[in-house]
Length: 116
Image (tube, rainbow, N blue to C red; front, top):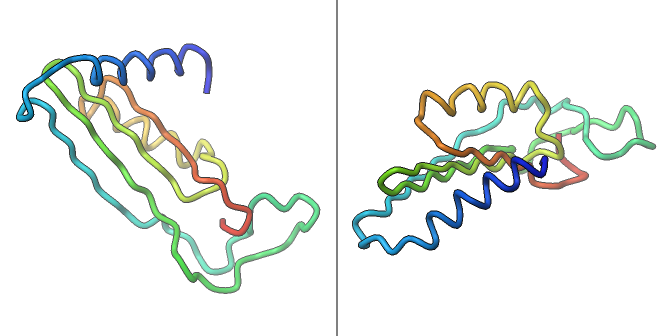
């Protein structure tokens, strides 16, 4: 994450944390969705083991989103069960930022060497 993006995210978090809204003024929403992955998907993170592929899906990867909102500020966090949030995954999510009215969006990838 760039220094400017980190600073923007920190500012949004601080704005939420330092304000003292009444309990009814802070709203939160969350959701989950599966990531479409076939059981023959290459495993990530094994540069020396090229060609290693998943044989089955024990725990299908997914995406989890949290949106926090108070008057004048709406931020989102999206966690993806992947090693790297590649552009093919990042770009559709980023396009939704404006439609959802988010002031800040933080996209993170969980780290695994045994997943797609």
